[in-house]
Amino acid sequence: MAFLQKILFVEDDPDIQMVAQLALEAVGGYTVQMCSSGMEALAVAEQFAPDLILLDVMMPGMDGPTTLAELRKKPTLANTPVVFMTARVQRHEIEQYLELGAADVISKPFDPMTLSSQVAAIWTKAHETGSR
Image (cartoon, rainbow, N blue to C red; front, side, top):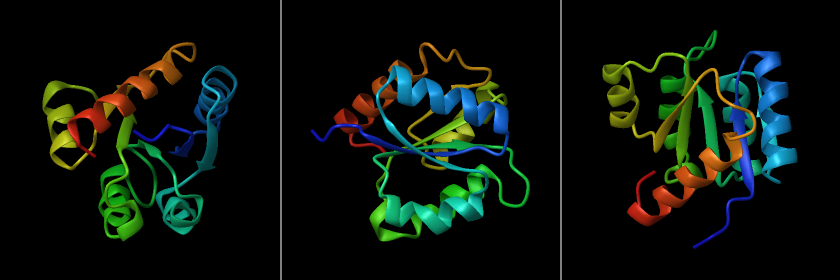
């Protein structure tokens, strides 16, 4: 199994970006590429070649589900695990995200001290089950 090293994080809120990047880099030891929009993610994702993508659901312009659909059109990203990060975590919403092809969902607000371990657990599960 490959190791989780590079995470593409797509989030429009600068405060959440800062906290999550610090948590993932300082606590988890990951390399994080931050994007503020779905369009920015589409522009940099293939070149960055992430092992995993963390994707906000509600963003202006292009929302998370639309961004996921566009990312899946790129052959090099078709099987990259995607995790939605959102405050919209009612059961039917989570089921919808999973049906769209998300590997899992992390609810906001998240705990910065456990974010990297949550991401690692999702990564492991995605690779064991072969899901994306």
